[in-house]
Length: 438
Ligand code: GP9
Ligand code: MN
Image (cartoon, rainbow, N blue to C red; front, side, top):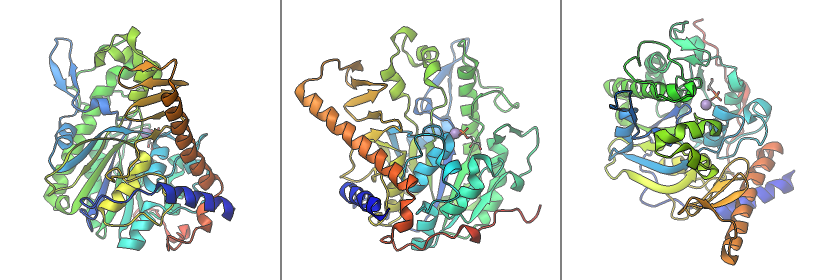
């Protein structure tokens, strides 16, 4: 009801984090190219896998070079915040600065009916952007074809736009090299400035070998085939991205664009982490839930050609923070939108990262699976002192409030009552994603 909306508006007003003056508008008018790194965890960055002879192999040389580049703002304390909706939850978070649902996926449950004020609609109406998603898979997976229309996406290049066959695809779609290669022709023809999202898939469970491309890259030597293949498929994604960047440089698009790279969620589940532990330098028997929580870090990098003061930023944040961060870089105020995250560059950014089930991480503490840990020792705090009790209570409240507000907005479809943004509601019927050439 409109009363619930008032509470949400109050929450947003109280948590608004003003832009950082030095960052506001630095990418104004640039194309935005999102690169979705499927199942990609932060530990892969700068990781070296030893083969059976003990020789080290860098898993993601290209992503590492971007990560350390003077034109990239990289984050090393950035966490995914998805639950059962996996990829689609990450999309919900990044496009709306709202969480996915606590059960199931927002895309499949509410994607066809809710009013959204998503990035494509904001950017179109406030800055004249064209928007497009690229993904070499069936349009209806995760109900994307329906939900994207409600988000205001102008175009959705699904598998029907690609030369896709048994050799160059698997159960989750087309492999990243042909996918990115064939995407460039469409990208080049989009009206600029554009907001585009490339959704990769090769680095998806079960991380099996699929062609000769990564033959040279070793598999890990654990008892778990899923872990063993993960490094080689990540390496394949890395090479695919390097190629993609060279196409964009050759086409001239590179200089007029900014690149936002993000991992959508973990690739190796907690049940497998003890097996993975020795590869990360921890004996299996010493691995704890504290470590599981730290493994929820995923990459987040903003690469802006021409910038020279890039760095590795240690701010704690999550996927919900991405949209206000991006809007401010593009010189668009986020003040009048119902967004639950905070600009990562803002001096007012609060470093409390909520996981979708109510667990959370801050620079000092980790709350995971019912236990509070001290980040300095990685040990559980069995008997918190009074000050810690106060802090934990406060953190719990903050996290619950953010999640409950998100659920109220989504489940109550509250944005349909919201006027203050001045946005025209999206008319999903105006979009037709069918490939006319088919
Ligand atoms: C499929 C791909 C995978 O189209 O986006 O989604 P996930 O299984 O990771 O949610
Ligand atoms: Mn995914």
